[in-house]
Image 1 (cartoon, helix red, strand yellow):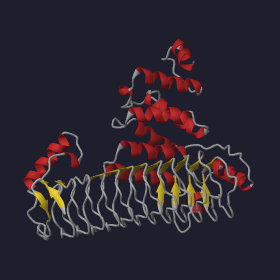
Image 2: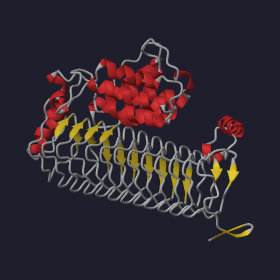
Image 3: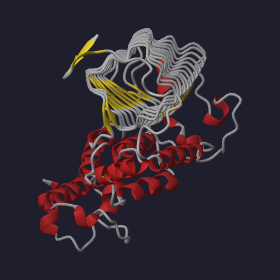
Image 4: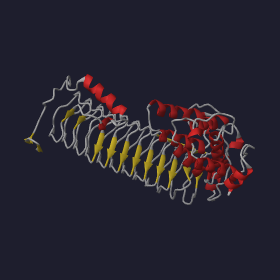
Length: 463
């Protein structure tokens, strides 16, 4: 029993199950246009109905039309929300524990300080939802679409995301202990300081994913595709990569004690220390031979994959930061280089042979194909790209240890300064300080600077 402004109130089945006539289409269209014009989120505009602080426990909302409704403080414990249309809903302080919400539409909804524990959300649409300080422990999101979802300080312990699509999902300070991502797609996803202990990524696609901070202790990546993904400052004790394909993965800043990589296929992977590895039967052969049962193009297979992921990000209007992150990681990993050339296998061959020998010598050279570099330069010159993020990425990559990243940054800088003889849309947006930093980078890298730049300026920039 909850209290509203009119006193105690309990409702049950008061909305027609067929879900017709609850939202006026003309009014909804006007609200959507006004919200988009103001640049606000779907859940931030005008509401079609105000059903806040109501008790809908055990009610039947199957197939109901309740788009852009305010459900602040409402209770849906055990309610049936199957196939309901709840796009743009506001669920601040709402309780949906044990709800049956398979095939529900929740795109652009907001969950803040909410609870949706042990709910069934199979085959749902959760795209671009905002989840803040909420508890989804034990909830099943199997076969659901969670593209571009943003989660912060929320709990998904024991949750299930089997065969789910998490393209570009961003997770900050979240808990996924014991969660299952088996067979899921996580292209371009981001996990910052998140707890993923004993999570399962078996048979999943972990491509262009960044794990920054947090813990993956006891997690399983068996038979997963781990491509151009970064594991930075992450605890990886007892993590299993058995039978996995690691192409362009980076473990440079993580401790990998007792990591299991039995029968893994490793290609262009960077590691910092391999003490305690179990690397029995690690295969460091050519990538086209490492991917069992799959036929890829012998050359530039990674470039094709990167373009496919970026096309998905574009078509789904995900943030430019996701696109920049994916492109940077693919390019830094050298994916897209000619896999037929033995001269371009240095990182994989040298690093993993040294690792098997328990050595810490992981120096190697890698070059970029003209195709991958062209794609990266094109991204840098896209007017929609964030110039601050690009500049920050340039400086960060240039200062990195790996020579291949420095060469990429030089290419970036030359393109943005229009030193390649081509116009670059971002050039006019650069501040004077940013231009000076780019020239300083080129000078310090001993890159060619044209005669149009005064020698006195070059001397200053190089200091």
